[in-house]
Image (cartoon, rainbow over the protein chains, first blue to last red):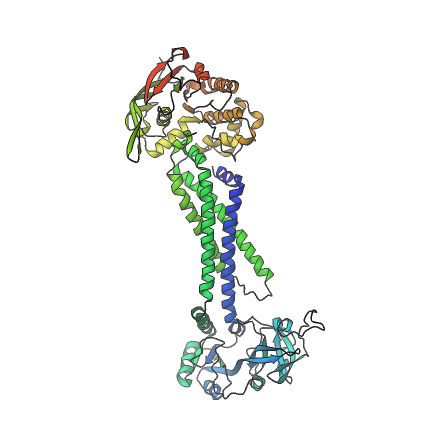
Length: 386
Length: 241
């Protein structure tokens, strides 16, 4: 009888495709919007993600997220190094500096100043050159996306494509000459600004003069020491806050969740997608059931128990749900592939398809429940009405 | 002496509509024997459909007793009644009621599948049944590809395929022309009455009265006459075509 149920479903092609479209659209919206939301949230912590070497990030207690820089006095570095359990501690500069491009326009860059000696917190992947090249005079490493985009040089004519920045080219950072010594691949930031890596001493030279320029102290805990215990000692002895990478990511994400409209905007889009799914699929399936009421009545008259009719309807909605969900997630994955190197923040961890599948299952169940009462209360006497 | 397949004693049925109670059956007394083709005739709204619904176990009656092969469907549980319909009753409807997205074989195999047959055996049996009603070459056709007469043949095959003891038919020839209607009734006599089956046919079509063993005339929820031949019938104009 289940084959009969499937034939009854796919035989009505108009309604079958309308239901598939509804589920596919819903799962596409839910998957895509959730993935973009997660992608955006991931970008807020992209720099922390790219810097796995330290066990602890030490900062001003008032810092709310990774780009909220409250500079520290350089002496804080030495205080941290003096805390028991610290294997090493290095300075990190993180700030925004304006770059003057060769066509005269300005572009704000996210400049990362790495410890001159260790170069800890460098870019995760070098595309061209090496990290050690930062030790060359005026050396900077530029991220690949910026080199090909925002920092690229204009072509010879206004219509010609931009010329990517390459090793050996120069930049002007806050009136200071900088030479590109490498191109790196880094996780895009929330603001999508170009990322420029250089040494700490050079970064502080590029930066506008301020009394305090140390953004973070990156700490490696001595082997065998408890990270949280060392963090507590640092906080106690220096008055600074010390967080592990995951903790700092959590703080940053919570800030964006709480203080920006991103969650509510994306939440609304996802919710709307769900409602669209319930409306389209529910209505179409209900109409499909109404169309088939006479035939379901015949089955009931011929001895089909309610349990069998329930299973048949569940099978029909489940089939629509599974195919539609796969179509929607497939389309969303296609978006992911197409937008791989674009500005679109799309990141689909395994949880997104699971949530989408659950949402689709819920829509299927709501739809089934919606139609089922009509079928279960169906009077088989309907078969004798002309 | 023939064994009664259907014994109705003072069967009553009323429908409740908002504030009014409309009686449909007002004390039906009827006996139909096994192997008999019994026709129910009468004007629209006289209770014919209600009576066959009660007999088929689709509708509960309010009062009296209606024994079908010795058991009253009213006294069965919902599950028993569903099983009774699935095993013992075959249905033929006025508008054929074939499922349009299924082939004729699939339509015919439904009662077998509902009785637990596997698909292959059900398909084989359905094809045999289609051959018996003269539709060997239409086993893969959809209902929309068949004429009205062919569709009714498929419906008959579906009603007979699981070898039920009782067949109830609601206006089986009303949508067919005279010749096709006659052929369908011949088919009924040939195939349906084999194996001592009982047929109850509701009809308005006086052209097929001659096929009946007995004809019950209903009016206003009661059987007012049972005739052994069409010539004995006293029908008002609304019943005659």
